[in-house]
Image (tube, rainbow, N blue to C red; front, side):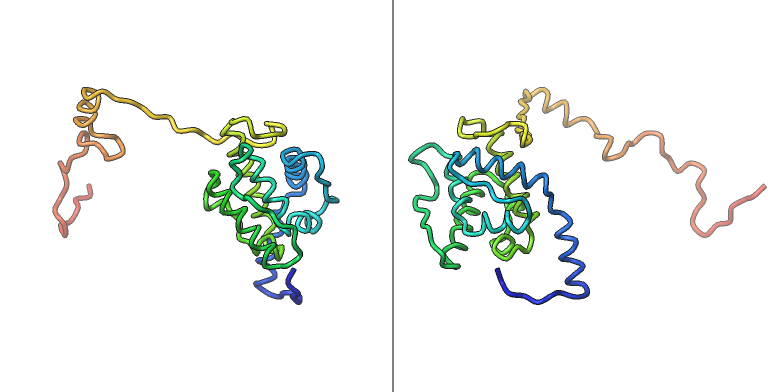
Length: 199
């Protein structure tokens, strides 16, 4: 974690707002899911934002998590080295983020590496893990382990098929969003600049 002094003014207000978005209950649910998904040999961290950040910071658990969502032999991250070097750990976090995006997590739901590494925005880390869990539950490919009620299912596309006749009928209608050509007229209007008669 970077060694920074205290922040003041607007920087402090912004950081406090970001920290208010962190959810301790959600942290516990995410820890339970990660342990269930990665296997029982993973040790749970003590409760708290800093402990959660330290638990995920080296990137190893995140890489194991994304690999566990794929069938054996098709894992996106082939080698997960155990290392104490900061740039290698940050590289593992980046690999997780790329693999999560390839898995189906939208770009807007993905956190930045520094959000986790420097604990700048742990709520964003929670959002990414929630989105990953939701995609895993939605895919329903047999790789998800854990309680299905922990995450919501994402909406699926619903394609509609129309016949040529139905499409032609739709072209002749004027949608109400575009307004109507009935009922409004300028009857009784006077020209601009003329006086109104008041009786």
